[in-house]
Image (cartoon, rainbow, N blue to C red):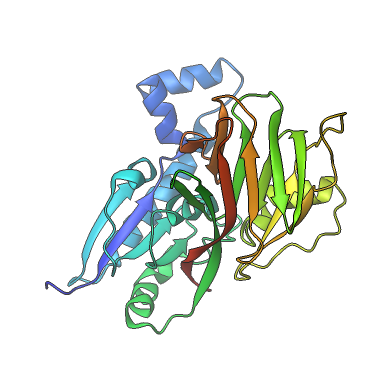
Amino acid sequence: MANAPRMVLVTRPTDYQLLLARHGTRGQAEFFLNSRGQSIDEAETLHARFTAELQNVQRAVPVAWRSTRIDRSDLDRFVFEPEDIVVALGQDGLVANLAKYLDGQIVIGLNPIPDRYDGVLVQHTPRDTADLLIAAATGEGRTDARTMAEARLDDGQKLRCLNEVFVGHASHQSARYTIEHAGHAERQSSSGMIVATGTGATGWARSIHQCCNSALELPGPVEPRLAYFVREPWPSIATGTDIIEGHVDARHTLRITSEMDEQGVIFGDGIESDHLLFGYGQCVDIGPAQQTLNLLAA
């Protein structure tokens, strides 16, 4: 049926599959782990559980629907259709990985191993797949429009992410830049900074927030504002530490001007391989993205 919905199932390799890819055979992988006092049994058991849930999800797709399955590594080459219903089967991070490639499509997060994965974004169980697909297709399911962050370079390049944007140096060298926010500016030298959404406030931002004993209120997942934190700012004769945290919204974006060499970078959601170069003299504005992640709520 030409107008039937399409279910796009997104997965990533299990640890067991990664072991086989690295060592060639199960026996070689088992030998490698045993030689280090470890066992392959747990990885194999979790793989079997994931495979069983994967089969359950695939069987739950309505007969009249189209469906396809893609790996996380193929996301940057896959063309999503406007009416696709996207199903992420795996860890919470899988939803963050795919979010920036979407433009309004509904996402259903399925947790195949609930005793291992927190389920912040993969909030549903695979056994409910059939009902969830129908709810998404008919509009009966409630969706959360989760705020995303967007970094916009002065040359027109953009990067969107669901959790946080990182700005800094690709190595362990200090990041040097000028930060501007809400009418104030300061030259800084630090370990870089992150600008987090409310979804990201449960991850990296939360860790920084706790370690710094910050009193800054972290945003909620659907709030149209972000929170930024400068990591380990260094006070010197040329650099300050006054602008180290705050809120960012559509009216008050964060502007960063690089004073780094060609290894200045901007990346999102911890994916360093998918980054923007941020060399000396370049400017980036960071704020809430116009697009949101439409996540089917529990």
